[in-house]
Length: 294
Image 1 (cartoon, rainbow, N blue to C red):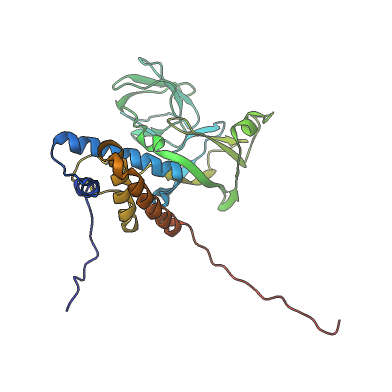
Image 2 (tube, rainbow, N blue to C red):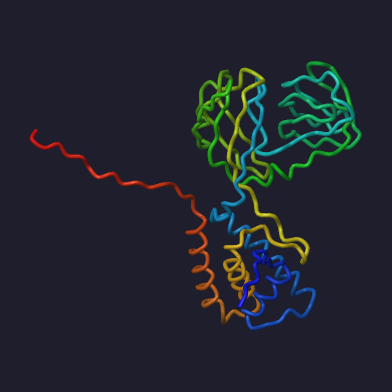
């Protein structure tokens, strides 16, 4: 007898939906059945985010800091333009039509800036002007905030200066508010993540150069279930948990008499998955040493 010698089993969105309906004792019959199940699947992903379950979506993000700027997007945010010309790091840019305002946070490439989250929204083909350099250019693509909006939380952060990493500590909203000297400059050693729809990273002291780099681990959203042929953004070990969770969610709408047993199965699979998904570190117990004759 031979095995398959393959390890590439995957389930797409439609197959998860079919499995969940079967666990509810039903069949997928209409387009509406598919749509309502896909909606439940995406709501399930939101529940997982609230539970802090999606450890596989942790990624490291790096931002080059700019002197005088203390607020940064929690993900990648660039503004595509016709040419960057003589724009400088740290200066404010303003949209001539929209009136949107942002600051340049790192050295411009030939056709884009990394920016802070704008106040307002830049519009396609409008002219933008640098507040310090007076340079002008036109917007060639509207900013995409999706990467920043995908941030759920920040787990840890360091600031790198001249090759050395310095840990920075996290503050609560009230602790950050109560800093008396918010304009003080220096090497940042504290941060606050303002968890808005587009989360904003606020650091203190205000950076005093354009070369320090902040590196942080951020927890991001699981990819949405869009097309029914999409595979799902989860590791193999979470397949049973997802199938059980979707069945439970569908039972609320289709088979309420099965809610209790399906919820119990889901919570059991959830507990097993969360236990497997935790970080591991070496654990060592050293026996005590004794000195005799003293």
